Image (cartoon, rainbow, N blue to C red; front, side, top):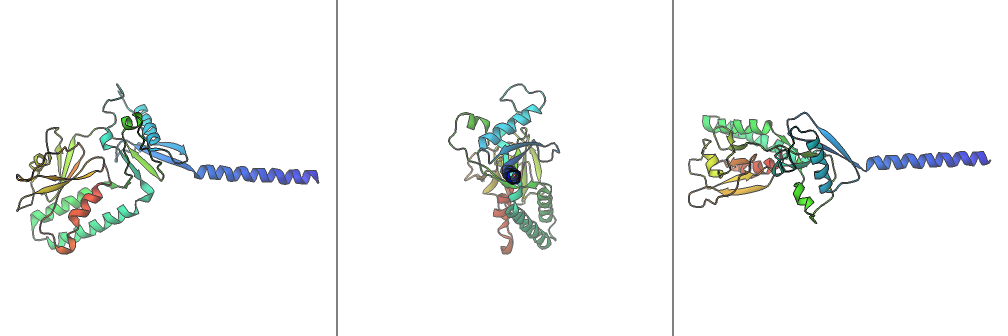
Amino acid sequence: MKAYFSLIRSCFVLTLLAVSTVAHTAEQTVLTVKIAADDKRVYQVTFDGAPRVSQVVSQGATVVRANANNILAHNTDTIFWQGAGLFDAANSADINSLKARIENQLGSLKEQWQDDAEKLGAVSALSEFLASSTFASRISVTLDEDFYLAGSNVNPLVRGDLVLLLPARPNNVWVTGAVTQTTDADFSPVYIADDYLETAETLNTFGISEVSVVQPNGELETHPVAYWNEVPKNVAPGAVIFVPFQGLPSELSSLNRDIPRLLQHRVM
């Protein structure tokens, strides 16, 4: 009888251990770290439970620096923090839905503008740019190593299928939308949005009063660019400038709002 109860107790303990192991595994968070959206090299970091953003930033930076070449110092251009992004790959249904809706609307716009070669070319170029881009739900948190090293009190927990993008500093600014061709313009620290518009041929026959600028960290800004309202604002390397379309059909008028919203979730 003692042997019987001993066996039962052993089975019970083993069951508890198995349940505990399963629960422990379920609480883990796997972080995928990338240095470029189109780079096939990925690194993974596993956390027990939901990590703080500071932990994600610190561990991600450690992985990138350990695999980078010619690292000279902590503050080199190895990581362009202004272009860093944290995305939840498994929770991007809304972003995928928005992208699909925009693609359908651009398809309708092509049909309506099929007799205007310039407008059709602009819409086609924009469609190709969006199709070649990767989108995922961006988690709105500060991603800057120094921000957390300084002891910030803003340090939330993050959960999900996390993808951390820690790119090197790019040397370009994109101009897309109502332009004859999506332009990959060279970045200049002294340029503002209007300067980049001069590198692209716009379609706006009535002049442009403002454009949408999606900074590389996903922040969406409106930049006035007309001679009467221009306000010089910084355009960071890797930003996307969206020139709004004029004369959109009423049923497609939301495109000028929806496209910049989608671009906020573009994996740089």
